[in-house]
Length: 369
Image (cartoon, rainbow, N blue to C red):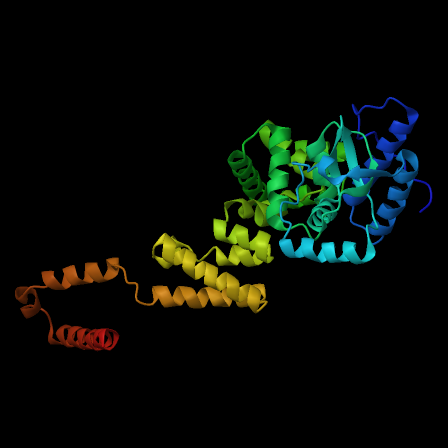
């Protein structure tokens, strides 16, 4: 892999009693950096760094029941199927890649390898091979950066992890974050400044700070935008694709986590709501679950999913009628049309009126039949 690039000490504040511990921290920081930077050679680079981490800290046999899960782990969706598949692989080939754990007294906090750990427990393994790293100062952020740009991290897990990190950074609640983000992006779009914000995603930190300040946003908005840019996230993309994940109905969130429903499909299916279908919550949920299962079983595209949603809507809305202001006004006008007025009206006008009324009566009969 060549010489490791120089990086800022992202494990500032971690315990570093020896030069060896410091080196381990630097290596783990490099692991984080690589994970947060999409690259076709990511896994090869990760493997090389693991070997160096192993060489520095040594490899241990750690008791499975002494390992605690990382509650800041962004990946909340781990399906039984994926664990079973990995368990078969472990049973057949053994443990190829060591876990990365953080010593905590007599126990260990799991940093990387949760699915392997779950699979090993399923197999009844007593120990697993692991390498150790020191405790980072901001554990949630490091865990988030480890997974945030992974394509296999579903949008619901990603949205929840990002909002948790932004809430910590800005001291704002999730609902307020969504409102502030929507407000500032709408204003930037109206003033044709949105493209300037997008261009800052790949910029250096100082350039991001200067760029956001030049947009004339409030202090709260500035803090929020910089927090997203610092994670290499496009604020507009977060608003459009991730924030909506947080308000999905429970059945769609379950489908994402347990059945592999994609985020775009879930957003399309949210249209099947009680308000849209003008039906009860129970009936709307039933329709949504049936449609979700059909989407997954038939592997429908997003476009086909929208077509399915449209068909379901049409079934419910076909018989739905509403009062028309135009018809109400017309009926009142006809009622006010007294015989005295008609007597004083020309024959041409009365003939035209009769023709119009006969045509409309014909159309009404056709609709009512």
